[in-house]
Image (cartoon, rainbow, N blue to C red; front, side, top):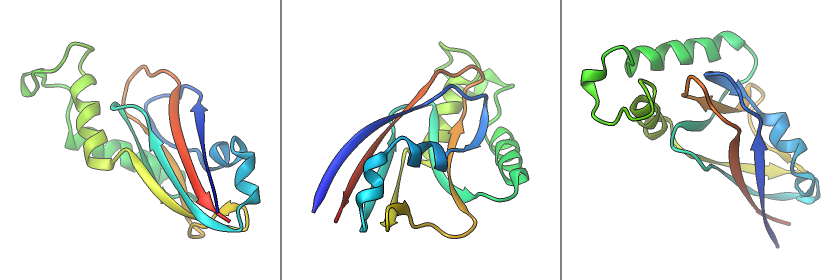
Amino acid sequence: MEIFQKKVVIKRKPRGFHLITSEVEEDIPDLRSIKAGIAHIHIMHTSASISLNENADPTVRTDMESFFTRMVPENDLSLYEHTMEGPDDMTSHIKNTVIGSSITLPITNGKFNVGTWQGIYLCEHRNSASNRKLLVTIMGK
């Protein structure tokens, strides 16, 4: 059994939900050597999230952003005490808690073995974000 970790840097993206499956796979060449295994992908930030969701229709990503903007509004700062970094500060942390900071995926024959219509999302909650770091841990044969 092999176990390895790789830090993957996802270049700065605008606020919203972004499909990053191919970026992650391309940045981990060792993935291709795994016939069967598991990948744990952890985002190393508290103001962005990672998720597995619909990869075909981009309107899903738009709808996700619209839903979370309504669910956790930024336009009323009286709702939050933690606003030091702006109106999207606390709201980003809330969205991270709801969506999550990690996913676990099966690996088969050197690729993530996900459903036909599934892809890895970077869920960017900040209005002005920086590059995002993922820590990918892979175990397999």
